[in-house]
Image (tube, rainbow over all chains, first blue to last red; front, side):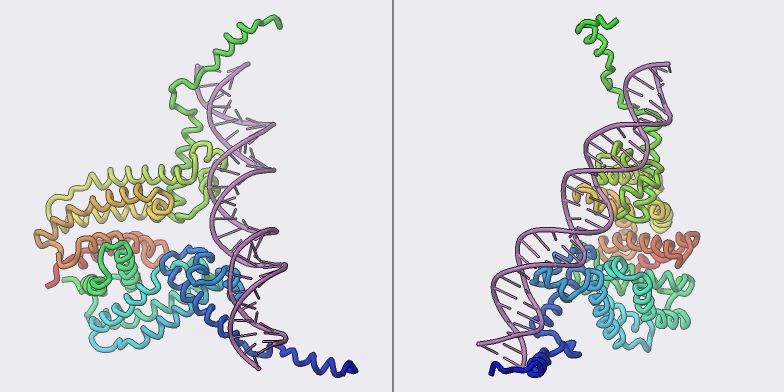
Length: 209
Length: 209
DNA sequence: CGGTTGTCGAACATCAATGTTCGAGTTAGC
DNA sequence: GCTAACTCGAACATTGATGTTCGACAACCG
């Protein structure tokens, strides 16, 4: 038994499973990563300046564990934002933007309001923590979801076109954000917010005269 | 010569002019204080998180000099905000809010837009750096400038009253802020902003038909 | 002119947050 | 059950900002 040769040892040593290409982590690790991203999403939606320590606590893991899975706060934020963007894209992409522009706008606003509530100030965190060009790409992507509908509505007289399109797009974002803040401060309640947003935007876009 | 008694010394020592009640600082000191408040206003209007070092540099004084005049960053911000509030109150107080509510609103919006451009993100700095109750008092004061006019317009049918007053007030702030951001980002230019704000708000407040 | 006041830079203390290291203890998965 | 993978707290290094102290120098004002 003890007569093992160097060759034997070598063979045995090979049994060190080189991490292989298995990107697969252990089950508990994957669960923790999920928890962290979920917690980070919720925390960042409330406060874009939230600390890593708070995120870890909210996720129910140690701070060190978090750093074991995410290189830095910045990469965590980036991943959170990327997931949120992907989710938002799916939701918004499923919306029917054809037919009466005003009705389509109502549908788009309803979905966007739901996402705004869910992700809140995440956009602010993105702006502060992500490389600028990356953030701008995201922002452009979001705006492009609205642009065609707005252009179509302006062309066919559904929406006023005596104001720059860029202003109207900014206004949309602004009103959604304002509603989010108002709900947070308790000025209005979440249930009525969707109606207020739609009523306000529709009025603001109605051709004058 | 060196024969001075203790009494002599004592008498001479009395010539230490006790600072008297003269609250008056030296001329250059007063000028620096002005420069600091001016610079801080401009800096905070752009970036509510600007550092004390940057404010000092913008004011053309050393950081130590700044701390010689202001106990802390927080007190500096408070004084800046107080001056801005006072100035804003004077400007807004001079506006005629009687007559046609829509015309009065136009006047109020024009003045508010000018102040929003000037003070930008100062309100954010105030929120972060001032004691909460103090900030809320300021915020209440601002809102109270709009409330009576809005209530009157809602009563006489000039403005829609199928939405909560609180929402409409939030909307006003939001649109002003959005315009400030849009100008900053170059989406629209400052000259046309006033018209866009008025056109947008008037439309949003028009009673639905 | 002369002393008081103010300015300034450099250096220091402090604080909070980020990121790292260590070592001991758990747990998943074969 | 063995082992690699994972967790976790405590302690440490680092960074950037806030405030403070010191001492030399300059400027206002009587």
